[in-house]
Image (cartoon, rainbow, N blue to C red; front, side, top):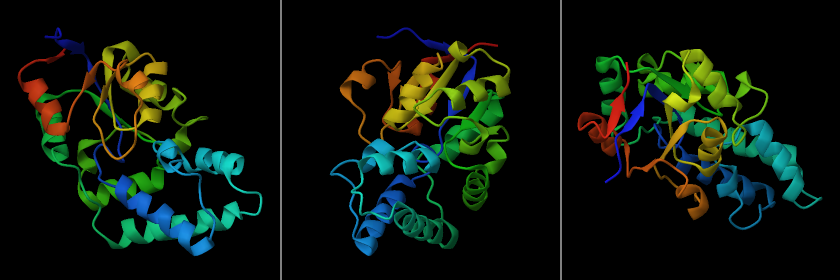
Length: 227
């Protein structure tokens, strides 16, 4: 059995970790492909999970056919996605509310660290009622480079005033896990729709099925909070 994971706080991803929005996003990209007639390489969508729209745009220019109007493709994908998250209920992942309430009640430091731009991040958190649990947030437009670069997690560590090596990153995506490792944080993988390579998985400190399991680990002190 692994020794308890001793940390001072959490750095928490949003989409695919707290919010069940990656499936919504995938459907929107597929709609954009059908509407525009331009298709990403097979399986390429999964490599984009966890990145900002600026990074995604740059990467699409690298792989899409030269005849593809990238701007139109992104306009359609963004329109469909915004319709979904503005008009529909923003779905919360199982265990997210209970986990965040436990952090509140226990006074455990945490900061949201998401590639989503600040205005959209705030909208999502307000819509689903989680915003009160996450007063500290670092968003994709707050930093120079998005995940898998370490910028977001380094900025979130500074916002908490804690050293990165004392913090546990909770992530669903490969890009997010790589970013957390590059920042020097401890990392835990909570799987969602994105594929994470075995090479990255074996480097994580923990793998949890869901946030219920993360909460259980706190309660039984497999994750121990240093004060």
